[in-house]
Length: 289
Ligand SMILES: [Zn+2]
Figure 1 (cartoon, rainbow, N blue to C red):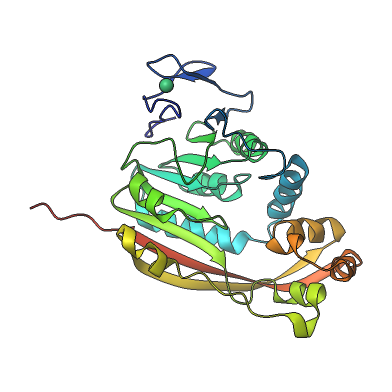
Figure 2 (cartoon, rainbow, N blue to C red; figure 1 turned 90 degrees about the vertical axis):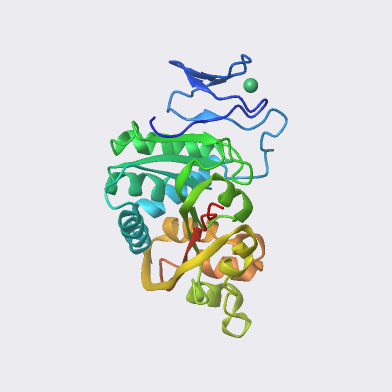
């Protein structure tokens, strides 16, 4: 892995890579899993059994995303990153990378990019690391388990932070970015999955999503908006397995009435709107005095 230094989650020392582990100068050691990811969650901060993504959900989501329903988003992300780096060597951190669909996809299409994928779910980063091998980018893509609100990297490490459908720790994003670096955020648009929500809650029960105003939220951290765009398209989801996977990727799985969930479970296909708000922010460089 080139281009990015990892820090010990216990003492903050720089980690050196050995064959099967990362080791800091004080001797704290972090094994590298067979798939290639490394667990850098602070001891005592391991995810508990009910948080994060379990193995079945990771598998379902990988299969859904691998079927290409969200390819327009991947295309938009890779084109934007490609334009920003313009073929030059650059470091990207995917904060909340999940099973690595966008992480690996961007690495494949931007060959000058070194990438660090961070997620709290070890099942997710395990799947992501396997995906990187499959797609032939594992020499440029490293995965670690860590919180994206407390990333194990020095200040000013990254040219780009990617945050796709993941909570945004704007202050932490600003810390890890170089001056002039960019944050690319993708979150649910107002009409995202409107037709699926109509099945779950009934037509009268559906209100538009309230999009997150990332530009306002990030302003106090010196991140200024340079682009905002909504990407909207239709997806025809085929088969109950994919419908269930999509449902499991949404917050609705926590708060759907039983009848609504049952109505969705009877569907063999689902034609719905997918709508993504994409926000590009830039870290202002502080002028020298
Ligand atoms: Zn240490």
